[in-house]
Amino acid sequence: MTETLEDWFAREILVHEQLLTHFLARVWPNRDEVTDLRQDIYVRVFESAQHARPVLPKAFLFATARHLMTDRLRRGRVIFIGTRGDLDELNVLVDEVSPEHRTTSLQELQRLAKAFDALPTQCRTVMWLRKVEQLSQKEVAAKLGVQEKAVEKQVSRGMRLLTSAMLAGADATSASFDSGSPESEFEHG
Figure 1 (tube, helix red, strand yellow):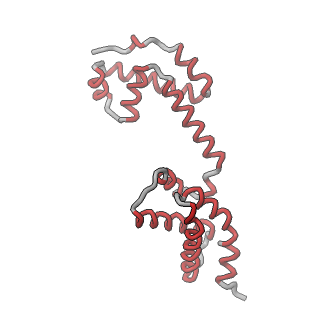
Figure 2: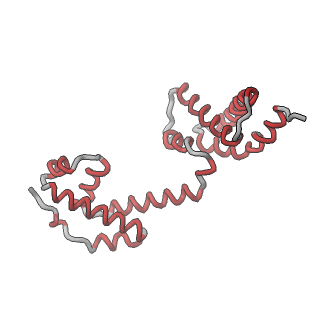
């Protein structure tokens, strides 16, 4: 006896209702729309399964959710504050973004920010210009009125200090930076 589409849908799709609802509530900017959004996702999955049943139903369900949310955001032409970051999450399967992974990533980012803030002033300035603003070594040297070699040394020093801080942990950050060489290492041209 062949399984009906309704039976397949209940067995393969509806079993993920709680997980889907939680996902939508977390990433969709308007919680009042989550129930309607979930229903629209179910309609799309059901209609698609009428033609061909997906090999990986759960993955198909969440891919459909991502596509539908993206379509709605495009149609609305309104990007809510915070939505951009959440859209990045939509490209990852839900199973890959665990709360533990998210917490660990945030802790690492906070440790890096703390380590960056603890860099000596000149070193931090050079690192910002080179790594964040992506200026060339020559452009940084010209902007700061120093020799290119001084920029190279500060970048090397900054990378070394940041690496040490990330490997040692946040507690070692301020102690390792305090013992560094003085600002006079910065050569003016």
